[in-house]
Image (cartoon, rainbow, N blue to C red; front, side, top):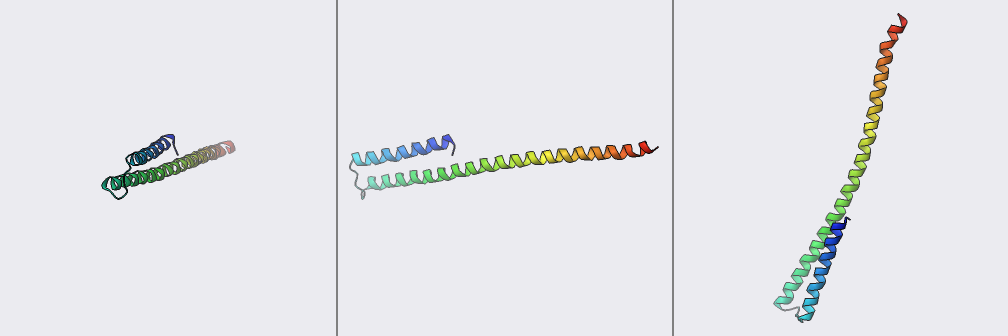
Length: 102
């Protein structure tokens, strides 16, 4: 996972801790309106963390796939260059063949 994604995840974790601390400092009851709002905030933050983690892993996978495809494309280019070279040599040999026999 890239450093920016890790940083954001860290900030989200800190946010959850701050909300929990505020809840404890205010002695918020879980059954009250404020307690419900705090639970909703924590749930939303956790959902954001999960989504961001998924996006981070997907980005890593895409980067790896892109690197693999780049390597494969380079191998194909090398193979094509060799084919063109061999084709040119074959054409040269075919064109020179009748001239040598004359």
